[in-house]
Length: 102
Image (cartoon, one colour):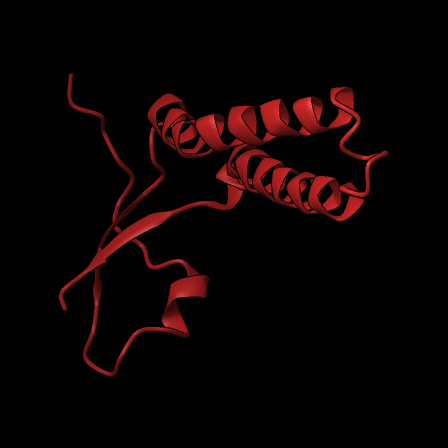
């Protein structure tokens, strides 16, 4: 089934980055499920991997035995990656793909 799109209008956000003789040929939003699954796939294993090591450090007394900086570094990377994962969900409403003639 072919999806009908609206006429090709250039969003005002694109006008500031277009060159002099450049025109936007096509704009549309991506399909939600494949976009979100792609974002999730990139971050899923990193979050599981870091979460596993954080738990192992903590359960094994790693934080007590002077390894607190390592646990904090793992936690920081975990939280940044979790933020990047969730931003894919929350930024979808502002996302538009575009093709130009260049």
